Amino acid sequence: MVDFTLTDEQKALREMAHDFAEKEIRPVAWQYDRDGTWPQEIIEKAWEVGLMNTHVPEEYGGPEASYLDGCIIEEELSWGCSGIQTSLGANGLASAPVGLAGSDETKRKYLGMLTEAPKLASFCLTEPGAGSDVSGMRTRAVRKGDVYVLNGQKCFITNGGHADWFTVYAKTDPEAGHRGISAFVVDKDDTVIVDKKEDKMGQRASNTATITFNDTEVPAENLLGQENEGFKIAMATLDRTRPGVAAMAVGIARAAFEFAVGYSKERVQFGVPIAMHQAIQFMIADMATEIEAARLLTWQSAVMLDQGRRNTLASSHAKRFAADTAMKVTTDAVQVYGGYGFIKDYPVEKLMRDAKIMQLYEGTSQIQRLVIARETLLPRRIEEPVPA
Ligand SMILES: Cc1cc2nc3c(=O)[nH]c(=O)nc-3n(C[C@H](O)[C@H](O)[C@H](O)COP(=O)(O)OP(=O)(O)OC[C@H]3O[C@@H](n4cnc5c(N)ncnc54)[C@H](O)[C@@H]3O)c2cc1C
Image 1 (spheres, rainbow, N blue to C red):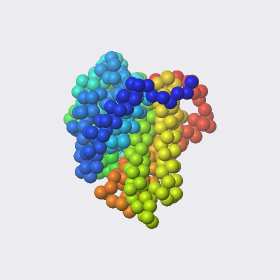
Image 2: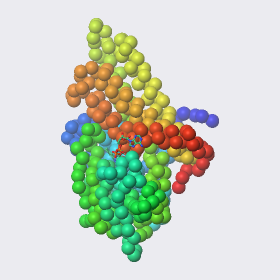
Image 3: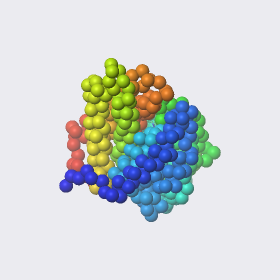
Image 4: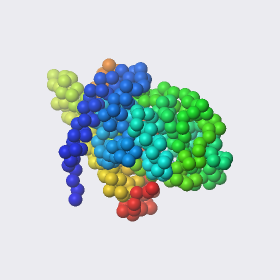
């Protein structure tokens, strides 16, 4: 059966998330963007009302929300401000590998830290020389007795400057390419240096930092899964988090769309509201269609996970299409505003800057196309179970 109707609980969840976005996020979003303000207060409030760590299982103190529920929340909060939602949501990216491959003890300790207090964790995959091609990473983890010793540098790490622990990918077999990567949970200590806070085009309320590991000792029990399984764990993580990024893109696009619709009815040129001009109507119509389509792909990719099915192809479809839609819709929203769209006193230029990152992080739009091409040319059985 195909049914796109949300349950009463899901509608209530959406309303709650929307209310939070409207009351707590929207009123400060443009100011935080201008000043690059870290949204500590909002993080604490969102944590308090249960809008963070959504997928953490109940046994570790989380709400154990479904992936579809997560997408519903992420769309609403990103409608408020996707930069702030990036700060709220990054725990999900850091904790997914722990949920996938951590021991019960590791889950209890590190997922528990996030659910017992409004703490943050970061996901450290990218390096200066290894972005799309993670197999080129140079961070090393060397086993010495009961510990692994980590050395190397990660860049563009969301929430890096505020995290209490990190999921870190490092080479344990440098000659083995992507098959030589392992994943670890690393506590923040004196050997973990936060080097740089990036000054960004968009999502300026989020924190993006460079993290350097200097002879950082990590207990051997903090290895996630087995040695050299890190790449598999990272890819399985992205399958789970890309629907959420797609939902964020839908939220940004929807915000821009709503502003454009409102403005087109108010702005008068040639004696009529510009909404009366067919060129504007067609832009609005295309925005509406693309947002609907992006949301459907997003929900499909999330529901597949909830059904325990592999969603690699579906999540790349969703992330690619929703990200490109957010970029197009926000650019067109600026067009609907005309010259005013280019001015910071008006809301849509922020959304256009925020949308750009959707095509970049958690796999660029080109990398999503590579995944889609691979999965299309060498299809896997859709019923294949979700990778662990
Ligand atoms: C604000 C922000 C937050 C981020 N947060 C995190 C985080 O929390 N944790 C983390 O680990 N990383 C994070 N990242 C890193 C992000 O995931 C990478 O920037 C992204 O994966 C791209 O890597 P790169 O920047 O090195 O670009 P590159 O890989 O150098 O790509 C440059 C260009 O080449 C294209 N390209 C590369 N290879 C191919 C190919 N084979 N075929 C076709 N085109 C190709 C890319 O699509 C892109 O257009 C973040 C980045 C930003 C900007």
